[in-house]
Image: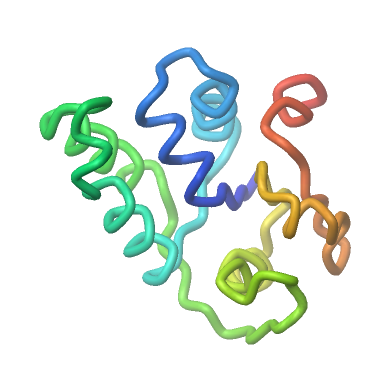
Amino acid sequence: MEFVLDTNILISAALFKHSVPDRSFRRAVLNGSILLSENTLNEIKKTLNKPKLDKYITLKDKLVFLNRLETKAKLIEVVHKVNKCRDPKDNMYLELALSGNADLIISGDNDLLALNPFRGIPVISPREFIDNY
């Protein structure tokens, strides 16, 4: 299976071991591939490297998480353009899902969840992913 996880899910997974986002990240890695685009990967790196997160995660743990993510992920070239989300910044996840033929979009963002399903791709919360997949 091919999964798109939004930045908030991935950052929460990096920061909070055994949390619902972390468990959904681990399950996605075990059951398929996480899809990333240049834009989503850059967003994750930029967010994870914000100084305000330094009190929650060490530099070493950031690097370990990013390495694991990049090792387990498929980098997809985005070929679809989408302008359907209430928050235009979230369109990159929809574009990635279409371009990578994703099976699921996993998000806690209400702007993305409101689109469920998006062009036949379920958009579900991390809890729903854990409970049903």
